[in-house]
Image (cartoon, rainbow, N blue to C red; front, side, top):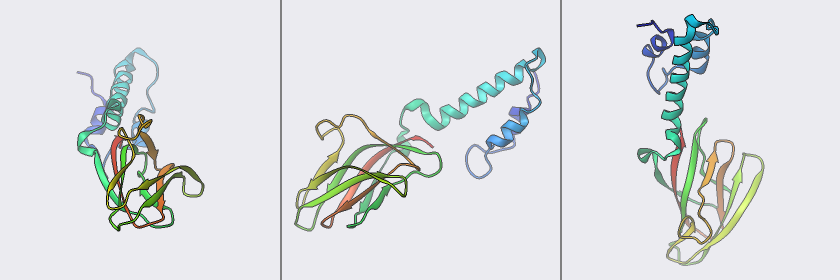
Amino acid sequence: MVNSRFLNLIKTKQIGGSNQVSADELDAAADSVFLEPNNLQDLLQIGHINAAIQNSRQNNGIPKGSLSQITSTVLSDSPTTVLQPTNEEVFSITAMTIKESSGSTATVTFALTDGSSFMQLGAVAGSANQETAAFGPLVQGQNQPLIITSGSYLVASRDNECTLLVSYNVLQS
């Protein structure tokens, strides 16, 4: 069996956590690899490792059940961050519900932001003392999930007290 500096490097690290193999470490391990027959095994292993990293982080585009969640955010009258991934995470929002319990209609305005600019997505009125679907398969015309990243994330504001429930899947972590 051919000794692989890539596999040996990964054996000394953990998958995930603070001791994971960095891209710089893998790049450095491949510095001396040239397109020669002697290095074919190393080149194949680089491709194998890259495919494994991509599959583990992106799950081939299929949501990971254990990373799917429903969050609850109490909204204010100014833009409130509802859901913001960190680092290179990618979230797919599949449904949102306005939960109003104060006895009056609450209109929620949704926007995407990068932290300085805002792009309004729309507004939905939540019925008094009810849960109102604001986004998702039950809302006509909303068949596609909303994809958000750390650079373009979801904020919302309201005119009357309410809570926003958001169901999302982690596509990349």
